Image (cartoon, rainbow, N blue to C red; front, side):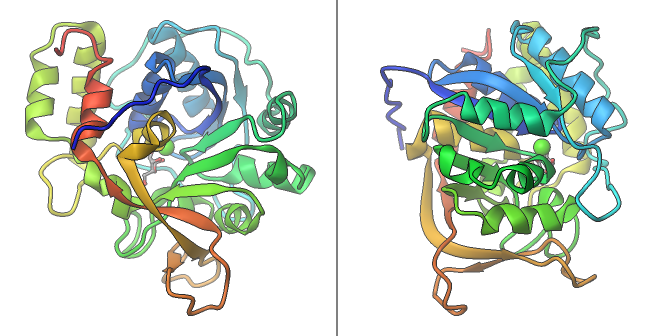
Length: 318
Ligand code: RIB
Ligand code: CA
């Protein structure tokens, strides 16, 4: 199915909250290359790796992709209540075995939550979109400081949650597992949310033809992406598919071209107590709990359209 990318008169201002992270890197690349997006800032959060590591990675990725001017603010170093966990599938550097040229430079702020709030309120009500692709600690702290932030943003597009199978436990996905209290807080706030959980993002599994195209493309970005996919494929499995899934760029693609992802209204709760189901997102589309929907839940990804969008910006892969 061809996705009809609609060119909007003005690019959409987006703040990206992330924990780079191999798939985060693809999301940052998409945000920078798409004319639909004005990436006004990046906040980092501990997740795939420690806060210093993911923060350095965010700075280095922006420079590597040619946009060192995008402000980066360092956010929360640990979850609201639980001990930090790190992912293993991104490696000790957080970017696989690849190291990028180190950009030495002070961040725009070491108070990422304050930066996030300032960025939201520097825009008109309903103007700024937040794309959140790591644990939701920064967003939860922002709600604690200024609950009215929820009414001021256009929407929050979140990669997180697991609807029937997890990647950190039988039922939990990493971002929600790493900080379930933050996930529960964010989903309980009164803002417009599009939630893309593993059921949606596992549909993005990398086709082998794409992996082969990247591997044979000499361009440095294509080669770096190819190396990241090789590394990611060692620790990130997709049920029923032979390649890893790129979870985070699905969230950015949803902003660039909403037609790529179908959604349904749902009430989603997050388990914050049980040691067996900690971080599980419980999806109710049938009104069992008698609760109004709190998200638009991603159901179907136009996989061909997603990969056409992403590959269209990677030099030399035509
Ligand atoms: O479960 C996938 C999510 O966890 C992605 O955001 C990935 O980067 C990791 O943070
Ligand atoms: Ca991430």
